[in-house]
Image (tube, rainbow, N blue to C red; front, side, top):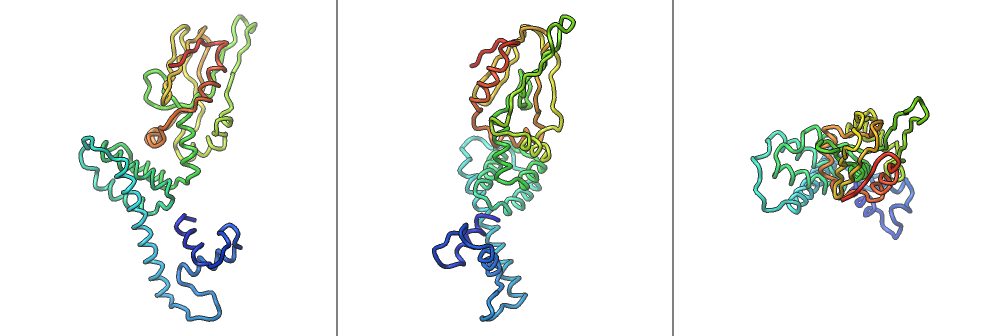
Amino acid sequence: MSETTSTAVAKTQPGTLSTKQRSTRHMAVALTRLIGLNTEETGQQATLLQRADQRSKRRAEQYQLNVESVLNHALNFSDNSLAGHEPDPDWMHQFLMLSEQIHSSRMQEMWGRILATELGQPGAFSLRSLECLRRMTQRDALLLARAVALSCTLNAESSRTIVLGYSSRSAFGGLVRSRQPQLSLSRFGLPYSAILSLREQGILYNAELETGVLEEAKPLRLRFINKTLLMTPKHDRLRLRYYRFTPLGQELARLAQDHSDPDYIAALSKLVPRDFDTSTS
C-alpha cells in the first residue's frame, strides 16, 4: 500500500485510533470508500460509472503528485554544471510514465536523482535500469545500498565487486593445506537471502567468482567509495573470491554511492594477515 493511500485510509475513519490499531475490516471499509463504494446499508450508492470516474480522477491526481515530487527532487539534486545533450525523447517519455507510479517518498527521491544524473550525463541510465527500479521496493533499495557500501573495484577495473574472502591452494605435497577464509556478509546487513534477491533482480551475477592466481608481492588495490585497501600477496597460491555487479547493477550502484562500511573493511583486513600484507589509505 502506498503512503498516500495509507494516509487517505487513515483520514476516512474518525476517532483517535491509529492505522495500526484499527481492524482489517476498518481498513477494508476505508478503501472501499476511497473508490466511492458505500458499504453501509443506509445512504445513496454511486453508480458504477460514477465510481469508476471517481477512481480515475483520484488516480490521475495521485500520478500527477508523484511526478511533481520526482521532478522537485531532481531540481534539488541539480546544479549549475554544464548539461549534456538533450535526453532521448523515448527515454524521457518512459521515465515520466514509470515515475508517476512511484508512491514512496524515498523511492521518489531516488528517481529524482536518476533524472538529475541523466540530464548531466545522457545515457547514464538505460530503460532496463528504469524498469528494474520501478519494480524495486524500499527494502530492495536498502539492500542495494548495503551491497554498494560493501563493494569495491579491483585495481584498474571499473566493475564493482563484493569480496567474500579468498582461497589458498595447498603446497608441499599437502603439508600446507588448502584453505578458504571467508567473511559472513550477514554481519554487515547482507545475508544470503539478500544476495539471492539481488541476483534475481539482475544486479549481481548468479555465480560466485574467483580471480586468477594472484602474483606474489604484487599489490592488489581494493578501491572502496571513500577508502582504499592495499593487499599484497605473500605467496603465489592465492585467489580472491567475490560477487560481481552486472552492467545493470553498475548503473543502479550510482544511486547509492554514499560511503563504504568501515566495519566490513576492518573485518576484511583482519581476515587476511596470514597470507597478505595490508595497508589502508
